[in-house]
Amino acid sequence: MARILFFLSILMVWGCQESSIAKEDLRYLNGYWEIAEVQFPDGSKKEYGVNPTIDFIQLENGTGFRKKMQPRFDGTYKTSHDVELLTVSQVDAIFVLRYSSEFSDWEETLTQVDSTSFSVVNQEGVTYSYKRFEPIKIPK
Image (tube, rainbow, N blue to C red; front, side, top):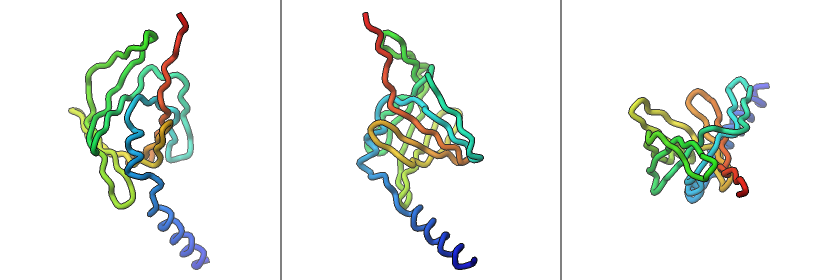
């Protein structure tokens, strides 16, 4: 039994050391995103259909910002102009997103990113999955 636990521990450490995210992939974070799903540490999930607010992320050379936006049917966006400053740093093989606003500072670990989706885990173990926002197009 001890050998099995030791072997599983080695596999977990080895698996956690490798990052499937390349630094070049961070460019995919730029743009408009809507939350798709939240997974809690107990395994329960909350899925989102239509979101009244979306996130706009602008990142360049490891620094940038995130803003909450409300899409309108005419293709424009409404915002409160509140901005969360964002920095991305690499710790070992992991990318950490650090946010700062006038109210709080917090971190999330980037677990997956590509051109259509990304996921982060916060310090409480909650996983947030985002998908690229596609505006609703109403024919004229």
